[in-house]
Length: 394
Image (cartoon, rainbow, N blue to C red; front, side, top):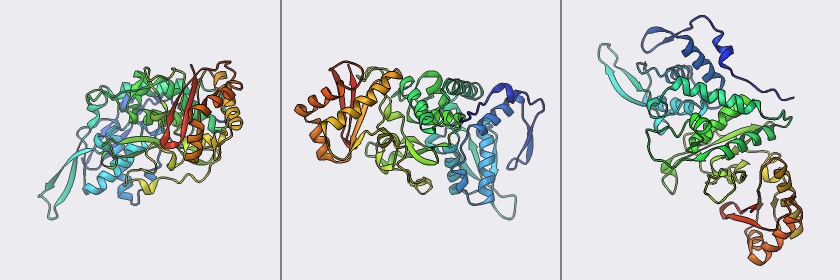
């Protein structure tokens, strides 16, 4: 039986002594309150260390650990010396992609360079301004609330033996319970796990960080992946996840599989266009931030790729073959209280043949004979970029 990890405030609060940590840059010791220690323990327990594993020096590792403490505890007085801007930016970015709670402006910490002229050798040091105020009104209570909600969600998950179904369950939860927020107001937190799990609305970063948190508690390795505004055609950055399922890495983009109310899809419709796919199956195929592209694992297995595992990808078109497979998946979704199916083609000519109006109506009839709904009326949409057709009963 696959064991779930449960991170609870009760267990962590059992620590009755105050921990002590040293901030090297400030050359002083600070005692942690029980609340701070609890927050730090939870932040550590819910974090991936995928990117940390690529830090090459003891100095980088030390900076990573100290920054994590400073940011999670919202220590606005934290100062660290002897690091150049390139190292600071690198470590800060890796940290923000490992820890679901550390939200950084433009994925960087804001800082200023100053000089120490009192020593014979000038020391450049970096004074950080922790930008929690943009995203958290109360870091402690909102992070704790996010973890408690994540624990609740995972506790209601069936005891799956196969990690594929764990990843799917958590994907499906977010896809049906979170709406994308297009509100440009930067004073409202849209990028935290709290936004997705408690408020039910957020941007892509909120979906991604919530999925990482859920996977971590459920026992799956998961971390954030991104590309920057400057890399995209529409001048918008994006964040999604990589998750390790049954020993292999896959990409998961819950944001683009989620449809908000009013989008024309039923509330219980879930797309799987971007669930457990390789780099070519992303909404922007192959596009990853230059700073981390060399750190992203290859998807070397197709065993748990959604369309392959569910027999919903076709390199040729046969009406009966496609219709029966789509109908069978719709039937299984109905049993879970969900609706909808995505069918994918590897060849554009086959895709065009299936979607042609006269043929598509015949395909829908075959689906209706196998879907368990007993209906012949469907809505559908095209994802031409990925050669995917989304279908759901009206």
